[in-house]
Amino acid sequence: MQSLERFTEFSLINKLTKDFKQHPDQVNKRHQSDSEILLQPDGSFLAVTIDTLQEEYSLGLIRDPFTVGWSVVSHSLSDLAAVGAKPIGVLLAVNLSQTSDSKWAEDFFGGVQASLDAHSTYCLGGDTNFSDSPSFTCTALGRVDHPKPLSRIGAESGDPIYVTGLLGMGNLLGIASHADKKLWEKLEKEYRPYAKIREVCSLFQWLKCAIDTSDALIQALAILGSLNNIGAHFYNSRDFYDPRLINITDNLRFPLWLVNVFGMGEYEIVFTVEPWEEEGFLRDASEKGIFVKKIGEMRSKPGISAAIDGNTFELDVPYLLNLFGTCGSVEKYLEALIKYDNHLRASL
Image 1 (cartoon, rainbow, N blue to C red):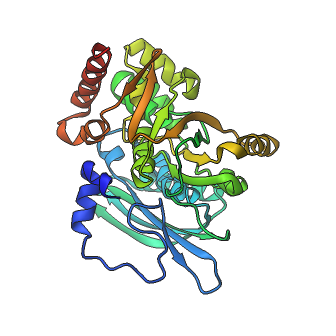
Image 2: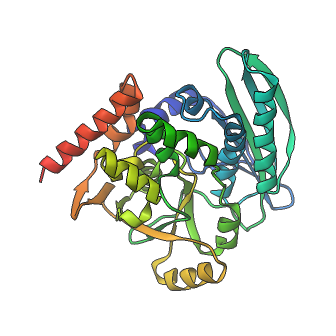
């Protein structure tokens, strides 16, 4: 737990909430799971999570109202998926722009309803206001019916690491918004992140620990490693990624592996399984028609290594995860990432 202090976000959270008392029925400690978990009198677990979609909107990465509405719901539901919870419903707190018209608001709530329908859940209520700084917040509630919920705790050295889908869809949108406006306009209309609730619940018996990739893969692996006092090796094969992302990064000559550092992830679930159960797990996933991809393995050495163009590099994870806060713009952030990649390769 203490090793998360290396990362600015977690250090700040720990500082600001150090005097908070934990509810006696809460079974997870700070940072240990994607949702907060409370034991219920009937032995089930209530999962609660909250997420705000604001930065993506203010940076201009997502502006289509239907897409914003869809995303604010699915983002929170992804945190339920990561603990193996089935959604009960959501609550919305929305600050609409004072300059937006009724059509924008209608399209936004249309996206909300479409995402609710796609995930077979409901809006239980909420609050709507108008502001100069639009923001969109969703609280999601879910129920875990298994003997215990999934958390970020449980990974061991030697565990294979899997993901529920291709990497890079969120960061594809982010890159396109600065590099190819026509492609971005097309991708934004198609951006429909889907919470992997069915996948996790169907494969629950095999999963040792889990986390979603909403804040990028490298941060997810760093959290799993830090909380379990181990590290991770990322295989980094081109077939892990959305083909459209490969095309645009190749055209820009932007190192593909760096998309795993951006804070706009793809809302897949990263998890580990027991090595000796891997064959049975893969057979079960195949029989259920669930896509999973092996992307690495946990290791005893702390930190993260990655295979990049045939070489293995140890990554400076604190630098990479704290970098965005030191840059004044997305352009400068991308430039700093490229500079890091150049430095990494020069170290051979």
